Each structure stands twice: as C-alpha cells, then as structure tokens.
Length: 325
Ligand code: PYC
Image 1: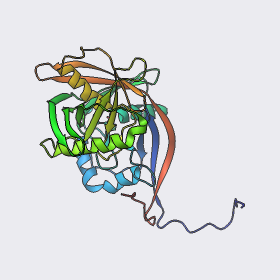
Image 2 (image 1 turned 90 degrees about the vertical axis):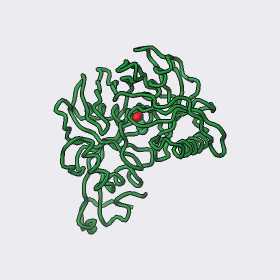
Image 3 (image 1 turned 135 degrees about the vertical axis):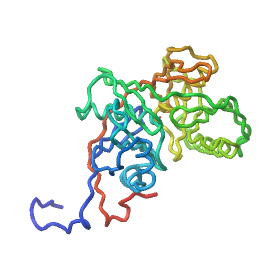
Image 4 (image 1 turned 90 degrees about the horizontal axis):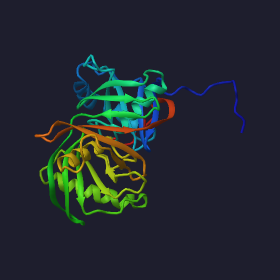
C-alpha cells in the first residue's frame, strides 16, 4: 500500500467536526482527561450551578469525552469552568461513565500536573472551586501535588447489612467529597487477579447498603493489609459506574481518614499511606476542623504523569459520536 501525499480528498465528514482539546494523564494508574478547549458554555454562576446545567443539558458531551470509542469506563473527565469564587484559580467539573462526581482527588492531582505541563501554573497553592466546595491544591517543586480536600466526616459507624450471596457485611458510611461505604468485615485478599470477584462483591454491597437507608453511597471501599514498604493499608475502590479505581482514591482516602480520626486510630498530622489495588500510593494526613462534630480537613498527596495531548473529533455523521452507552 502506498500513501498519497497529494491528490483528491475523500468527502469531509458531515458538516465537519467539533474539536475538543484534551490532555490525558494518570494518577497512580487512574486516568484523567482534562478538557482544555471546546467544552460547552455553562453560563457562569457557581460551579455547583454550572454542574447542574452540565448534567441537564450536556450529558452527551460527557459521554462523548469519557465513553468508548474515545474513552473507557475507567476514565474520569475534568472540565475547566469559570469559578464564581474570586479567590479560585479555576473551577472544575469532574465526571465519569455515569455522571458528575462530587470531588475527585486523583483527578485534582492529574489536573494540576496537566496545567503545569501546559505552563499554565507553577509551584505553590492554588484554590479550585468544585461542585462540593473549594479545595486547595499545592503543586510542589518535584511535581507531586497535595490536595486539601473539602471537610470530611463519618456519618455512621459499623453498620451491618445483609448482602445476597455474601452474608453480613459491616462498614462505615463516610463523606470525603463523595459518599463511601468503607467495609470493615469481611476482609478479602486484595489482589489484582481478584478484580472481577471484588467488583462483584462491592457492587452487591453497594446495592444492599442503598436499599437500607443510605441512598447516597456511590463508592464502596474494601481494605486489607499493606503490601508495600511503608504502606498503612491497601484498598480496592469501586466507583459509581462499576469501574474500580486504579489509584488509592483521593476522596476515598479522605473518607478513610475521617473514620480513623473518629475512632482515635490516627493522630492529627500523622501520615497514613494508602495503597491502591495496583500498589500505587497516596499519603494522607488530617487536621481537626471540629472535633465535637467529627469533622476533619484531609490532605492527600500523590503524583501524576501526562500521557497524551489530543484533539477529540466529534462528527455528527458518526453513529457513535456521542459515545457508546
Ligand atoms: O480519587 O477521589 C478520587 C476518585 C474518585 C473516583 C475516582 N477517583
């Protein structure tokens, strides 16, 4: 086969393409796709209000960016939007294969490294407005990022639910920017080869928890002993769209810190090294915001790597232009 340099061109696709500029990265193995240009205009206002417009009117854009054939179930998208809080450098909407996320720790680390890669920000503290509040991300000179997340807390301790096919499962319900059920018992081996059965169990647990009065829980977190030097714990996190988090999950680590603090198992400022199912790590610490209310300010530190700069082409004549869902 020879490839012609010049000559007649094939007919252009429909009325042409909509172009969406993205930068991809991964944080501890978990991918983030930051939309740099070509996203919808959400009309301004608070990031929470812009999130509502995005949810209501631009769901096919979300799908086009993260679903196959351009993405995959595990991909988390990040759309930069104008912040309403003048102290913030940017607003950001995080989304995945099923909808908007509240906050996203690995995504915030990916976003910061992406913006540094583009030369749009340098080392130091940067405030970001998300749909669930303002977070402060610090880009360190070694390109690691610390995210001071939204205040986190445990809502219920040692809840036991009966899970079909498993039996009794006991865990805590906690907020870390998303809602988590953090399983205490049983403890299963957290091995990458067991991902299918861990996914199946976590999905059943989520359904059982949500029919018993915790409808807000959208992530399930399993724990086991650490397997790397210096680790405090290993986790497996099932995300709302049934993909598992390749990273230790920033919001899940925040929820874990809230539980450890409430149980008196971790002191203020003491490091907690959370491993993912892949063995990648985040370091977490917390400060009390209100000890009586069990409210903490978690900070999660990790690193990300840029993997691609690309332009997504959205051609209306493509039957899968808006993603396979
Ligand atoms: O890091 O917070 C996180 C996260 C949420 C979903 C996937 N990653």
